[in-house]
Amino acid sequence: MKTNNILKIYRHEMKFLLSTVEYEHLRRLLGALLIKDENMKQGRDYYIRSLYFDTPENKDYYDKLIGIAQRKKIRLRIYDTSADKVKLEIKNKQNEYSVKETMTISREEAVLLSKGDYHALAEYDNDVAKKAHFNLSAYAYMPKVVVDYEREAYLLPVENIRLTFDKRVRAFKGNGLFEEKNALVGVLAPEYIILEVKYDQYLPAYVENMLSSIRMQRMSISKYCMARETVG
Image (cartoon, rainbow, N blue to C red; front, side, top):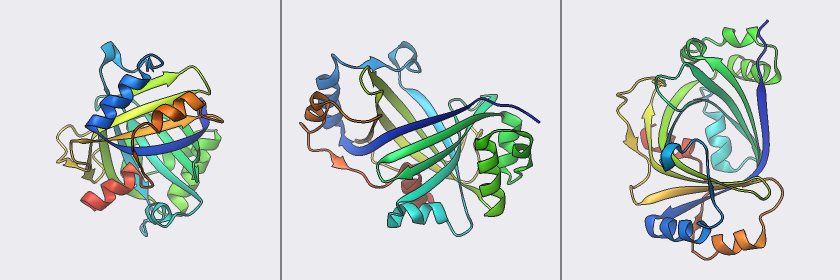
């Protein structure tokens, strides 16, 4: 039986749709407070690719669209198409509160999962693997869509605040997690950016004031749902 370190992160989460003008304005406002995420090598945005799974009836997709209070998404995530380690994540949501459960698997195991073979997860002795294996197998989950984007991420040393700006969101229908030449389609117009605000218990008033200084559009839809609506 394999052992594996798992990570559970409990947070509030809000999403906003920004124009490039609003994005630049917000970055200037927060400039004195922001600490760059360590993944931003030399201050550059970093790459994220996720492969999302869903049931044949697209239960997780429709749960999000109709606003089911308790819902989830299951995905594989990489930061480089040549990666030999892959994150398996279950993202559970209840309104604005999220719990992300993560474990690391090998590239070979990720390839098996992307082909609908979930037996490799039965070899792990942890809650994330057991939960993922049960859901993927019992409800016949299958790969649905690949989502790519670049992320600019910052931290604030209060309430574990994390602000991320996701750019050039694009999608590919299928399971090409490691394919470099996927026929990706833009999900958002280039002039729009997604801001995600995550924090533990509360946002300090000065952060709320900065966020409310621009007329950002609050988002209720996810990148997964936008990708499904774009590429099927």
